[in-house]
Length: 393
Image (cartoon, rainbow, N blue to C red):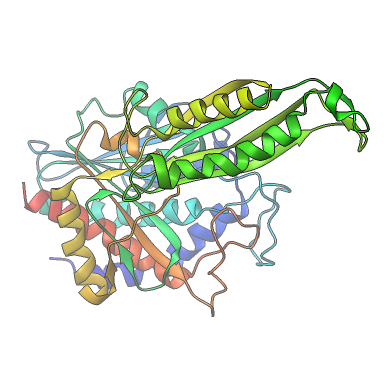
């Protein structure tokens, strides 16, 4: 049996080189053409037959001793963000205004390295690994891949994913059953009043004062209308209205997100988006305004399957020690949730925060980077999780 720790160590230079190359050449969702070509070439060199799916997505099968066994989907996301990099790294983005500011460069390099090691161990398990390199994670690319058939031919029995994670210290792994990310609804509210002169406010219907009341009052949804045991984050990211300081505008626009870390649907008593819409409508009525809404449900919460999470926990404690395995959950969103809605799934966080590596900036920040010493942890986690999955079937 191969010594997995030594195998990972022997590939460390290549692992880092892969990550740095992906980092220097970021591409937005469904534009990952160079990225997908590199992934295809790498997988072909391992003897696999990668296939394109969903424009830039890549899927490759690794069959074990026999294919008379379960099919495990292992996923890495590919897309970058429209962020101007400010890390000063020698391998910083070569594309102005684009950056791997979320760690997807690390995910691809860890998955490719894991695929290389597992391809050398295919005689040690029965079943099939379906390696999935997914485009457009930032805007729900997983569901598009599912619609395009990624869970079929062969039919997937379970799924695993990881995310390099700056909220956790290097050397830790976050694993827990149940909800580990949030659902997210994106909203735009247009509050319409009647414009006028700021010297004669009584002749107008002021949407600005109405908008300020909305921003203040809807915060009570989190503490008065839904159980405080159910995490909610209702945030405004944009307020726009008016053209001049002495003109009351006709309308004001509010944009933001509603995140909630529990399963609910429109019409349910605890649905925060329904409550938001009702409260905003009522506030506008009080102020003599009317409102219109534009909602977009981007992601559901990632809900980890208990058995798959137990498997991930056992692997994590062998790699970093039980004291460094944390029951972590986040109010961020992850479209990996779509896979978990169809098959038992587990999603784990690989801690990467280190002051020495300057990797303690938040995700999506222009100074975001990772502690490259945590890359081998992710590779080992992927390899050992896959082997344990097949050994338990």
